[in-house]
Amino acid sequence: MKIPRYIVLTIMLITLLISGGCGSKTYVFDFTTEEDLLRSDGDWELMASASPGDSSYEHTPKGLVMKNYHAVAPHTYSGDFKWTVDFNLQAEGADVAVAHFFLFSEISAEPLITGINLYGVGSDDEGFYILDSFETVILGPVSPIPGIVRNGPNRLEIERRSGRFKYVLNGTVLTSNLQLTEYDLDLFIPVLWGWQSADISSTYSLIFKRVEIEYSGEQVLR
Image 1 (cartoon, one colour):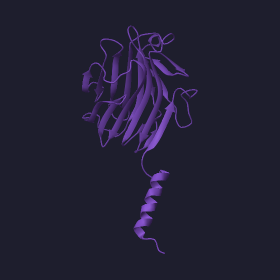
Image 2 (cartoon, one colour):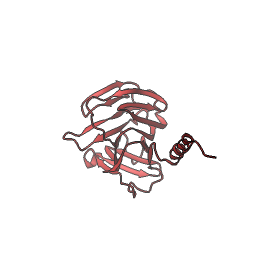
Image 3 (cartoon, one colour):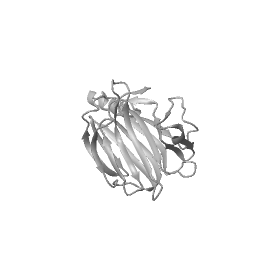
Image 4 (cartoon, one colour):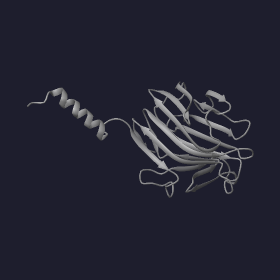
């Protein structure tokens, strides 16, 4: 018996979907299980953002702890993506934390930056804002931070679909359908930045634990 052509085509399409012939790809880096920030598929780069005496970091089995440091992902991404960051906070009273989750472009004449800044976590001045460029705030400040867990695990999701952004913190939508006006390049480098008021040798107010990037465009080693 001859199988109708449309059935054959349907079976082929389903097979491609199941086998990953189309759709998204995923990059995962778990700071709690990796021995260091160097891996065969690309190395994370740590960059101090203050003087040596005011900048420090520790990579421990609990995760990555930074004070005035950037952690730059190994790859650039284009197209649609969903960036998920798991992090832990122990911030209250005198233990204040600040966490930046940036998307950065280093190839234009004037590098662009977008992303979210969670500032003053654990203090009365807590809030967040979202950047369209280095100096342009496109959303916020908003205070306090909706959905934040000041003492415990947190999950932030930054999603880009058809040029519009959605930010979700612990299941709470911070914004959706957000369109940037100044960041006009289809190129993003994920960057983490951390700060805490306490010395990281004694207190871990902010710990970055795991990063996952689901992307449909291109991933290129920097």
